[in-house]
Length: 149
Image (cartoon, rainbow, N blue to C red; front, top):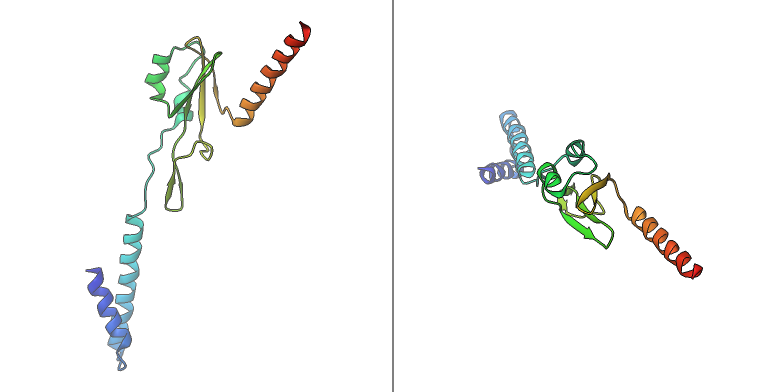
């Protein structure tokens, strides 16, 4: 149907002889073509399912075990484990224009839950800067201890 409207509109546009009725039909068809085009374009736009991790995190409490957190938050998108702690990282995909971006660093709703010995010790917006600070403090502490010996 949109193709037939476009063909009819095109034939009216190239027709040299126009009456008032032709102009009215042309305006109507042009408006219909714009409407159908707008509907077609918006119908093809991708959608992103978002989980409100901020709202869910309100149900967390210190000392919760991993199973309790899993029931509230669902499965983490990524985990990060070292000798001292384990982190579960959550974020939603973002929509930029008509493109869905699944990138943890670009997400504006990133939530990190930290476990020590299987229990929640903190949660929030743990960023790369926080990780660098934590690593620097541990390095400085290890250097100070080695220097004392």
